[in-house]
Structures are given as C-alpha cells and as structure tokens.
Amino acid sequence: MLITTSFRANEQTIKTAKVLAEDLHSEYIDRRKQSVRQLAKTRGDVLVVGKERFEWYQSNGEKFFFHPSSAMFRVKRILRGEKDPLIEAAQLMPGDSFLDCTLGLGSDAITASCAVGNTGEVVGIEKNPITALLVREGLRTWETGVIEADEAMKQISVISGDSIEQLKKLPNRSFDVVYFDPMFEETIRESSSIAPLRQVAEHHFDHDVAMQEAMRVARKRVVLKDHWKSTRFTAKSYQFQVIKRKTAQFHYGYIVIEEEKRKSPE
Image (cartoon, rainbow, N blue to C red; front, side, top):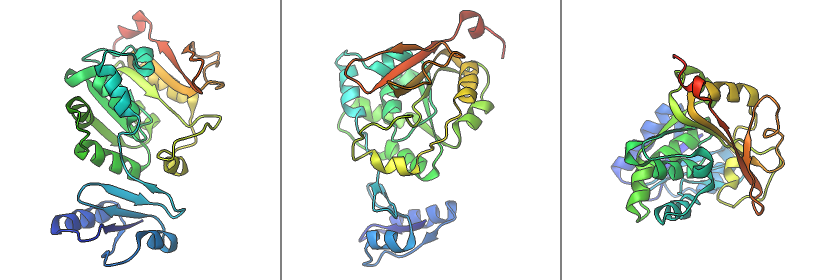
C-alpha cells in the first residue's frame, strides 16, 4: 500500500503520513499533483492522509473512509426513547460492557456505546488493519453535531486483530455482551458506503469456535446478526432465540447465558 497526503498538506499531515508508512511497512510518496485514482490503478491501494480524515483508495476503483453511517439515526432514535433492535436483542443497559467482534464501520458499536453511556465500555475488533486504522481515527475525530453521538464514538476502543484469537485471550465472563455481525451466507443489497468493505472483509467465519469462545466470555448474552435465512440461527448446538422482523432482510438472534454459568469462577 502507498501512503500519501491530500493536496496542500501541512507539515503535521506529512509527518503523520510518514509515521503511518513506517508503522504499516508501506511506501510514502509525495503527493505533488498526482491523481490518487491513477496511482491506485497502477500501483495498488493508496491511503491518503488529510487534515480532516483518512481515505483509502482501492485498486478496484472503490474509495473508503470512515463516517457514522446509519449509526446517526439509530442514536437519535435512542435519544428520543425509541427502541433499537440490536439494543433490544442485547438487552444493553447503562454501565454494561459490549464486545463487537466484527467492527466494520462501527455503526453497531456506536449505537451500543450510546446505550451503555459513559459508565459503560465498548470494544470493537476489526481484522483488516487498514479498516481498523480508519475507523479508530474517525471515531476519535469525527464531529456529528450531536454531543451524545460524539461522546459515544470517542469512548469506543478499537483492536486490530482476529476476533477469535482476541476472544481466546479474554478471561471468563469479562464482557456483558459479545456480538457478531459476520458476512452473511446470502448477499443482500448493500448501501454504496458499505460496498468497499465487502472487498476486504473477512469472509471465513468459524461459527462453532466463535460461539464457544463468546459463550465463555459473555456474562449476559451472545448476539448474532445474520440474514433471515441463515442456518447459523438454527444450528442445534446453540439455542438461539431469534427476533424476527417481517420487513427486514436480517434478524438478530441471542443466547442467554445461564445463571450458573455467569457465576462460574474464572
């Protein structure tokens, strides 16, 4: 991956780009007047460091940058006292801890962070290091104009790594809710903002291992978001209770951690 800057970059932006190039073991190049899309087409993916945001130009012509996406209207619904299907499935309360094992753009994590409030904890795991970088930076710097949303974004911690490997490192009962939103077994129509992520997302999902580790780590619930036809909901090994929504192409399923398991020693 090439690292460069936006046009008319200041010294701090150039310094940031050079540091990122070292951290990512990538090549830094001066922007000058070169077209980023042409660079991406001929040299591969390009990460553009700007004063306000980072942009990832992929060699296939797609461009990706962080933005709150659907989280904004979901946060506004919560602030109005309305329900959100993820929050209902997870039964999140102020002060709870929430582990998002498939962070992506962070829409679910932002919504969860708003629900748990400043006394809660939200951690997101993202396997692709560039996606993790862009989302971490975006959560820290994006300003929505809604104080509660800005605070919710800033309190999310982002981990770059494999979610199952990260789960294995965690103690028993260390998060109230463990959440998964893996690539669906059946494709649904996506918004144009999400499409670039599909090219770099992790398509392999070891459902059995993920559920075993999640049920060990969770104190209250394990929650899965998936296509309404998904066979993951009906696997006999796990007793998912599915919240079915007539007009939605995806459902939420949850496993309640039994009381005796919650109290088991670490």
